[in-house]
Amino acid sequence: MDKRSKLLSLLFGFFVLFVPANAYAQSDLHGREEVFEFLGKAFDSQVSLSEKGRTMEEIDSILDPYFTDAYKSGFIDENVVGQENDFQTYGTDLAPYYIPFYAFSDKTKVVESEDEIYVVEFFPSAEEGPVNYEDHYEGLKLIKEKDGWKVAEYLYDQVPEEVIKQAYPEKMKDQQAAKPESEDKPFIGEIVFGPNFSTLKTFMELGVVFRSENRTILVGLL
Image (cartoon, rainbow, N blue to C red; front, side, top):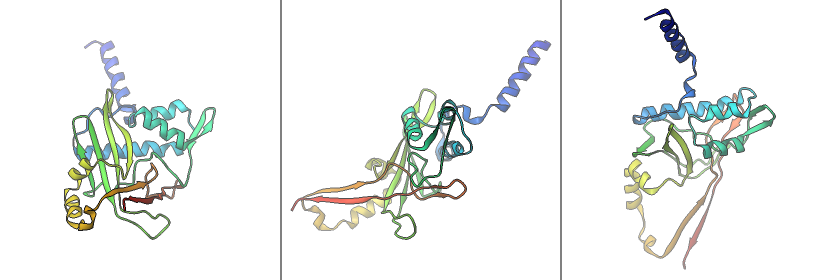
């Protein structure tokens, strides 16, 4: 190898070493641990936007490896403020489009298919403290685009039933066994309205508070 080739090889090595890891989208995800790691980096990219003012192009490039254009646009519209070339996120009572506060443990389920990944966790009701909510599932839908996996949709108690059956088969069995006979009577159903954002976490150092409120409307036939 001549000196020129050696120099080019050395420069390429330095380039690979110092380019940030989030400059590349996740082209593939193998198993739940890699999915969890990916979501952790996605969440870090969101939180990092509070550190200092940036141009909108810089913000877009930070979020782009982890989120679809639609999700990224929704996050920016709801959370990024500023003007000219000085944009960032600030503490707020509402934080739509942030990655949910998952336990990232056995409680957090991953349901995979060829071109979609659902990450789901069941949150039991909480009636004490600053945040109150009913039993619900929170989910993220990831899709595979040309440049890799991206977070495409946040699901507050709107996780597809088939996904819940795969993620929590024991809960579905318990629910079926616990249904009273009266449920056989004509009944339209239960509609749950909730915000399209995550709950359950306060970032003391950032002043970001996740808060959720929902209400239930029962519609039935007499």
